[in-house]
Image (tube, rainbow over all chains, first blue to last red; front, side):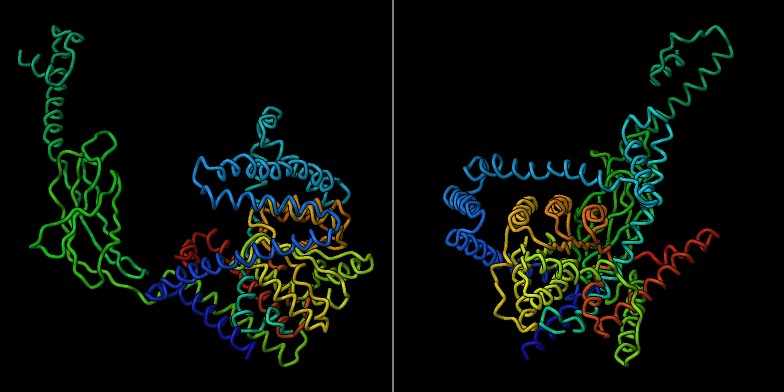
Length: 206
Length: 406
């Protein structure tokens, strides 16, 4: 019974979502919105679980003092400051919470995003080494696309931007579409397995 | 004198003409006459723009009711050169005897208005007027029409057919597998390496890190990822290796905890399950990336799995993982992130392989049967694509409409 009830719920929910795609009539037309609303409500309550877990894990780390335990102090302090700032003074524009968001949180997020530039450089260095014919092909097409998309490319040869566009519009697009078709079929197959209860790993089924 | 007056009315500067020449004089007369006629027409039509014609209301197809589509043909004054028509005003009444009520406007050049405020079954009459903002044309009236809801979306028949065929194929091959028929599934290097990755981490005495993407449980990739997590967790439990699962969403954390717990129970190692190892970090994309990077650098995992939906953080994570020397296996259905994973990871499951992973790892005939069905569906789609290209090349364009979803 412990497994049957979740399977029945999954089957009904899955079939309802499939049907609502083909049946525009009410109540089917409203079901997707209804399910989305339920999901949002569950997500909000699940946030409590998430926060509880976060606080529990890092409090334990402070007690056990494993390697890098002081980071937990930073996390808990950051959490407490933002939480208190939001609860006491609100989150509107001009509040202390707003100040922290724009002057601490956002710059740190931007910094993480900016790191991407360095990671792209290091990854490109590895990827573009012409060790195999495929890697050489990748290297050549990457150089053509990159140079073709900056003013320098046009300066070197005015047809380079066209070559770059051709690579992006045809070989690249064809590859992406092939992947997308595979993904769509994979989603159908996985959905069917879950709806029909064939895939039940999440229920401890083999 | 009259000629000069006419020219003045028409706004033409007479100084530029030499009236001593007869031909020119005749031309001026013709020009002036035209100008006056044009000017008078302008004066006339600026008061009353010509009305739109052929106002046709119809129930909006394939909807849940409550909508009527109104189409008309533009007013003859609705041209770019003049400002006689600035908008069309749409009026509605439930009876010809009652007063018509303004329900909306459509900009100049438009020939369509969707009235989404109707009550199903009620008859409505529509009236459309062209307007320049001050004056209005005569109204163009429509026949009575009522809205209704439909029980089937006719624009999605092709999707229904495709769903039925693919579902049939998948179920057929599942049945074949059930009857004991051996099915060949092509080897997927990334999945073959899962055992090796877990084994390597075990030998090195290092933990395994499993990153289920940054999207929530309503994303199919996350669902597939949690299913794969179950398989990986079972192996980790068998090998008695620590499994770390940092999560970006609370619901994913809850689902991952349950899945891993069940896997440990199945593997006969419930004592080894530690819920704190499957922890929530933050919903923030780059906060999550920073948190996971920190964990990687502190814990130095022997194997890292990236399975699910990733965005810009993919390379930040994968490059940091690469710098720790861990064996890395990634799988995502985000085409824009695949190049990053291919570059930074040892193995990458591309698109559909992510969804095939669970079935592949389980080696269960039922699940493998569904993979075979999926492959057959792909073969049919390839055939349709090739056939479609040939047909369109020979001018049979109807196939595009057949394959387009409404």
